[in-house]
Amino acid sequence: MFFIAHGNRRVWFAGSTANPNGAWVTQQARNLGFDLSDQGVRILIRDRDSKYSGPFDQVSHSEGIRTVKTPVRAPKANAMAERFVRTVRVECLDWLPILNRRHLERVLRIYVTTTTARGRIVPSGSDHPNATSDLSDHLSARSGAATDSAASSTSTTEQPLDARHE
Image (cartoon, rainbow, N blue to C red; front, top):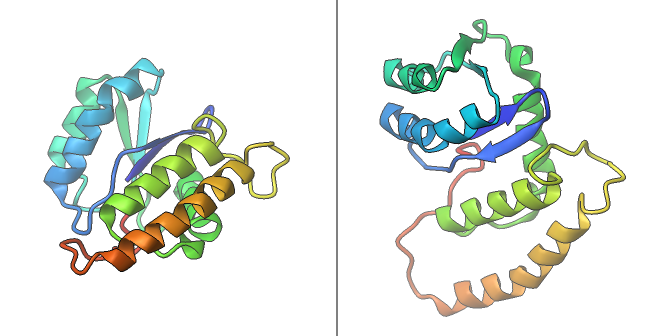
């Protein structure tokens, strides 16, 4: 789950779970609520998924943020979020074997803070100096350690997640 400020393209990564439900989504909104309102966010655009129920909207309203629902079957209505998901998959997740939820969250936090230029989305192919080199350096340095650690572990309690549950 993530939030994007359309005005300055700042990204907040809220977390991930294999089974998002209304309670989990509402808790993520509570965790980020103060930060979003302090940043001047006034409108929250969301889809019509049942996970975003009454309590989720109440959290945003309590922070002074108005909720706007996207039209039914209109993925272009929130194109910036759709593009961000595609960029994360193509530039990051398609290149890494994700071991578990903890690893997924770490990779996404690094991606959002490093690759997105202080939390802002950098277009693909950008001339930004940190757009890909910092993440590539970090991930190549960590890939050996992750492989060694996975090879030395005989069992795990967490199952690998599908990248769609960001």
